[in-house]
Image 1 (cartoon, rainbow over the protein chains, first blue to last red):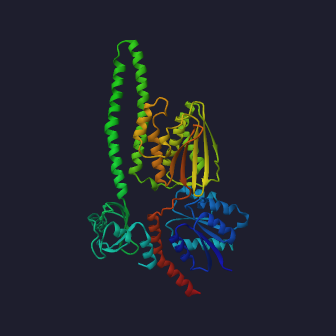
Image 2: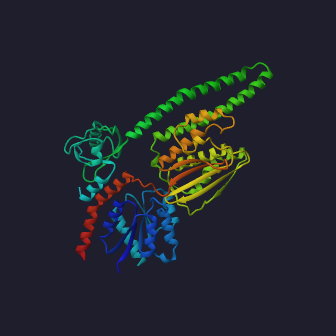
Image 3: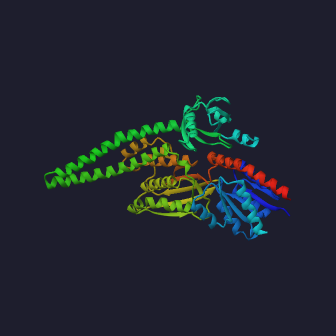
Length: 125
Length: 374
């Protein structure tokens, strides 16, 4: 069965780029353009991994979505990778605090993205 | 350039110009052409850019570098530009941002700032110096007691004026710096706590207490400059305190509506003049002068502080509102979008696109190798 990856990112162009990068692998990709939609889709799809932008407009930012995914027993085992332009130490610490499994700072390389996704998906297999 | 990157460039509101190392235009997106017409193959129309490219070729300077350029159309008179490495090889990229409105605003506020320095700071220093001399030279003890009273009053006025100048210079600073570069993640409970701590001496002096409703760690964060947003909320609190009766109470209520966060302060005191209610305007001078004349009206300082807060909120996509309540209390509300700003940060977007472009070849090679080996 194909692994499911959910991309939650408000910038359409970046979402498409990430999708294009990951489609090289044998995975099923889903997209959401804000935190609320991302959380809803995560509950419905139960993906293996969520790629989550930190700074999104609206009532839920990436940290909050991550915290809620990690607190939901139905989503136990779902890996979360935060994607962000915020690379300060305090931001990384906040990412850890909300339970993220990895943190990619923009601009990130597609190679780095693929390696991180493969590493986490393999570990959860 | 691939068609997807070209589509991305065409959709951008910022201008993008691809340049050869010799300063020839290879590509300019529609936004760049609106700011200044240029032909593919021709020299880039700014001498400064050509000079910097020449300096780059000799290794005297490095990219990225920021440049201020003149606009080349009626609508665009000033451009903020960033010269950076291009997607491939030796080429360069020029990112253009129309700075015309900001330049005009900076000009006006800079004039205001100069005016304050020339017309207010100098005379105030002269007054301080003069009263000091008077104190030192008064001959009789009785005269000294009378003079001391007057001088203490002068000192109080001086302190008040200094505070106003601080706000006014802060106001000017807001217009001359790129405040929105700050994208701090701000949690509402911490924001309220920090802002209240700034005004608590004023509240304690008037024996005013406050209570809060709706503060919770589950509230969505807001993004922006923590420094300026805290100052804006502190201004609202200060106004609520200044227009409250002694030993009264201020209620703070936080509500989330749709994609906005509303922080509302309600005091129980003298109220504000009706013409000042509603959306706060930036015309603060008349309010300061008019209010000062009324013995039973609000205390001075109403206009400037709120105009300052309003400017901060506008820069963050928010708003300040004042409401006269039926029971003669006044509400001061601050409204801000929740979550990150919806506007795209083109610099980050371009850096991400550059990174992808430079690593795409390696990615394709890796995929090809993987396919061959299977």
